[in-house]
Length: 291
Image (tube, rainbow, N blue to C red; front, side, top):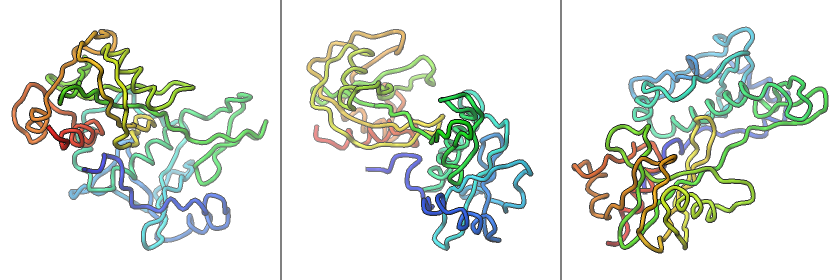
């Protein structure tokens, strides 16, 4: 199975440095230290799909440094948070064009940087008392000087899934999708709910299909802004579709041979999700099963 997009990061996250002020200061003073090049959260890529880096001397005067990790030579890599920075609303076509160009592992580093910087931009104030917070733990937390509450970056779990029935997979289409694109159904987990229960609920809510025997396939960080996509397949009890038009524009059952052909680039009844999306990984894994 192909590795999901935004996975395979090659930096050691170096958690021990986050707890050691002297070691962190030494890392920040290391002449070899690298700073991720970002322009309003947009990465700079080299011609071979590698992230662009510069020295810490190029960090703005008011920047706070987030430790991304160490490479194999123990060289520290950082990203810079500057007051007032905000991730752009939505996802630009320019960025999604870049996602196909990333060399293996590079998108994972970018995903970590984007998610944690965006978290800092949206969590400047304490959720407990409302006081302004300060960065600590090498940028992987914020603490409140007023009530001493500590806050850490969180990820939002999302189930993304196929229903399977008689050798066919259920795919859905949202109005915002490019023409002819269909993908796996998806939705956020709710409090007090297991992954299996969320899969069954979401498929029932969106397509009116009841599933059982949910099995896990793979997961993927999704940094827009900070989700964990959990890919699953559930066995449908029947193939009758009752569409929730608030969620989906259309839903179709597609045979395994058709999915294989479409993923191989052949013309078919739908366009597949892009390779960097875990829906593509999920479809690929399902298509590899027996007819």
